[in-house]
Image (cartoon, rainbow, N blue to C red; front, side, top):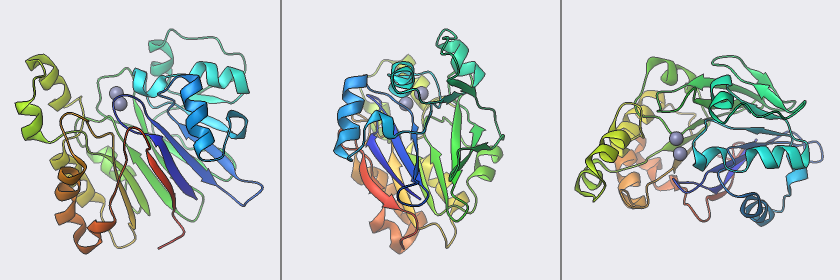
Length: 260
Ligand SMILES: [Zn+2]
Ligand SMILES: [Zn+2]
């Protein structure tokens, strides 16, 4: 199994996961937070097109995640997974035969890839984040969450790779020119993860087998790659120089979970 990002941050998110043998690989796109044209051009950067996708999963209805999901799914006839709450929040669109409903803790079989959504604390209708496995390796995706929970930590045990939101540095957010209400929203229990909370989550799911950590969904105003890395470093020790930081324009290149 391998994964890459086509872009990560408050201006748009899209993560690709590929599992299975070459030739019979299954590809899942998690979130579509760009225009269709932009997403197609970002897919082309990794040598793919819309008709190479086998499923799309949207974590929640915020624009930086839902983006072009409806047009993408209908143009390429790709099944589109989301929670009922997300579907209602975007106006319950009709998309005959393509909308599939996901629920907390209910595994979804996508062929060579199985995904298990889990509920997180975020200010959307019914947000879900994901644990993914190809039967050999496990990947956890966690963005757009305001606070940790036992439920979330439980779903992130035994991972080989973790994509972890490091949205903001607490001091940078406090000093920013954002209005007080926005600061309270971002830093609140249903907002986004600070570097410090992300480090606590990493600590709670850290084990010898966790070989790949990606810091994602960084705020371009209230965080820097160095601050995010520095926050995670004490938890991940000498491996921390290998922490990948996803960015808005380029995301990050393929990470193969089978490789050390
Ligand atoms: Zn987001
Ligand atoms: Zn969100």
